[in-house]
Image (cartoon, rainbow, N blue to C red; front, side, top):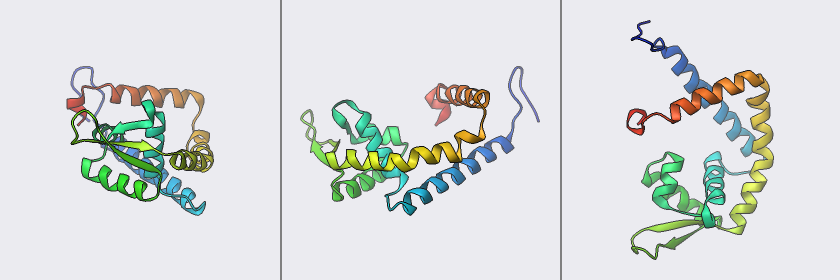
Length: 154
């Protein structure tokens, strides 16, 4: 494997393993939620992001950025959450063109219910397989990746 001065060796195997592990773990999370009669993980992500946001609302574009989804996909996902009564849409006062996704009480309650399945799944499927030092090492590596210049990451 070639390296430039001071650079780590190129490892397509690490990348492939990262993608495979992510896929397997997300699939297992989805199965556990489904088995409990709960909606998909993407719903949890939206509800959690909104619950964590100031006033429990975000502009659709900010929500899309945090979910790493296209605006179109976020719009469709939020439409389903609105239909289920978990999220409400509110027009922005600033420009009238944009809208906010706003968490409802029903959405907050469902997010809490989903967490009772999601949290133990994180422990069972991920946490218990890594030592404290491996967790710290992975956190450090993931932070370095996230702190890169956004232009390089995207």
